[in-house]
Length: 253
Length: 358
Image 1 (tube, one colour):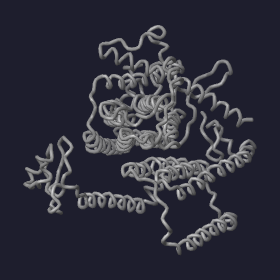
Image 2 (spheres, chains in turn brown, red):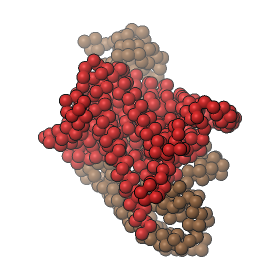
Image 3 (cartoon, one colour):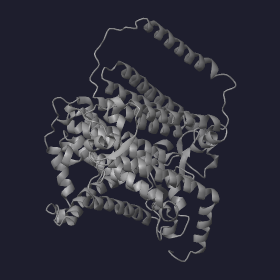
Image 4 (cartoon, chains in turn blue, red):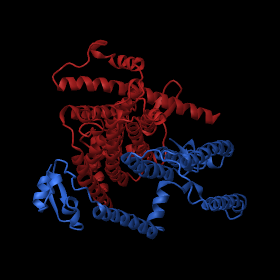
């Protein structure tokens, strides 16, 4: 049975229990190091390139596409780090769901290319550069001093990043943070619903798409803000009649 | 050296699977036209080759030699990128499906599993790649600079994110039950019982299967959920401005998507390559697997010949108000039954009754 050796990410026979200790494993980890480095350079370069392109593009849709590129490159980096679950979730959640919504909104609003306006917050540029320098310095510090320290956690690498270990961790040790996060997301959803209903005033000539749908008084008449009593109707005229809203002379035409 | 052999095996596997899938996709198109013809009381294409057998080849040649028209005001780069994304995303999932059990290759005396690659998160990989496929349609609609295309693109992105949710939730029941995301492992678990009763659809996930089936049809933009390319309202929807080979790529992506969701349904719910006498003759598994896939493809075509199209608000309310709650109920039910040990009891019972299906 062929599966992948979690230590060196290659196909090995599952009944070959000795693989981890043998000469063959050491040999293949050596080779693996170069391949991993090569892949890292490739995907890290791609991620950085896409990130720069995202900021530099004038067209918002091109920025969105670049951001998708960043997310996918990051997912590939996770795979090289032997964390396939995180990689898959990265693609599903960020590239597959959130960015689709972003692209959807950009398309819906039909945003044109932004014009270049003179930079108003000019003083923020040096601050930004300073912060970037600090971040870079931190990364260098971690690479050269922290990772070479004796306390690098290397225990049982083969479990980390696999689905079962992440699931077990989420539902035992990190249960409280997990639940708090889900509550936060629920709050965001409920908040979005509330805001959409309160602020969702349509122009008074807005029509009902043929078919049964809920229509509130607030939507028909701007003066009745906050009146959310609804009726189920087939057409705008019917909604107006049922709600007792007088339609102005303009609408009648 | 070992690495090279491994890579070569992967390459051979990909080539074989690709060829098989592409051939079957080409003939699905022909089958669709013939079956639709039969349903609608006409003949369908039957002139090229015996019984229209060479029609896919003729279609291919025609697509290649057609004039490739690019709209003047289109956004060039995205316009070219969109069909590439659609086709690549559709084809990338083939590598994780188990086509058959472990078989013995007589010439080189080697036993292999008929799956290109196995990894820990195969099912999530499929969902991830599928979700990226939306961009092909959405970007095609946007970049064509055409109102019909844009409408098609918008509809498809709204539809696909809505139904992706139901699709993903419907699969959780299977995952809960099998405890793994590895597709080969899921198929092997369904083999643990006698014949047809081992399949997930029969005794474990009927509701999940129903939700998956409906959501999968919506995901692939097929009738009755084909609003992104509703020809009576949107000319051709998101691919209105595409011609020649670029159009063919979208066409291909749609049929490959049909094929892959059918393969996933077969793998997760219909027991994959399991069937009578598979243990004695492992190669039979391939035929069982492809046969079940063909069953699904026929269902697709049958639906297309039978059902009218949804209206957009019906589509949305159906997805969010019925499918998603049904999928959540399925998860709660499965989790409760699993916790109560009902599945274990049932499987023991079925094993004790092993006179039914060989």
